[in-house]
Figure 1 (spheres, one colour):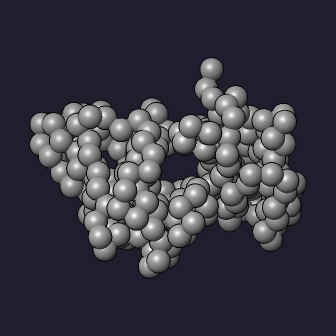
Figure 2 (spheres, each protein chain N blue to C red; figure 1 turned 180 degrees about the vertical axis):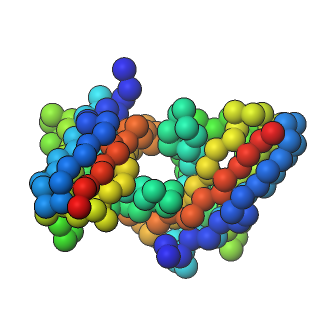
Length: 108
Length: 114
């Protein structure tokens, strides 16, 4: 079993839908990152979380440390949100562990 | 544009050879991270440097080594290359705190070992 699991692996939705991507981890962590990888390969860091919730534009990220779970939400999704979303954690012994990513496709 | 530069963009080489990948972090960032992304393994953390010192180590093979220079640029050296080393290699830099803060990724170096 991977130490960082994401679900779903693939998601196709219509423009305007509310999107949720989940990340569960099995190790103690100091921080969690959500990354976005565009079809061209470039990676952008969306959020770094150690507790609570963060919001940036239409993106919201939450983390529940006790349940070892984080979610990334996209409101009013748009075709330009189509990308691979990757969850990564930094464990307390300084390992950085990535999930396998969620491939999101938003249809116009 | 993240402000992180990586050279070269593409590299084709043969098994057994040695290559050097270079990364220049954003101005003012003290931390540099190296990652490998292959089709079968996904993204993997290799190593982190902070202000010239090794800070954390991940799944970096003994054939691979890295360093961060006084001007804060970093190099990743890959030697005795194997077919399985073909991958996209990213570096990222982060703000001066030294912790795992927001990371700025370079465009990557695509390595193909034939």
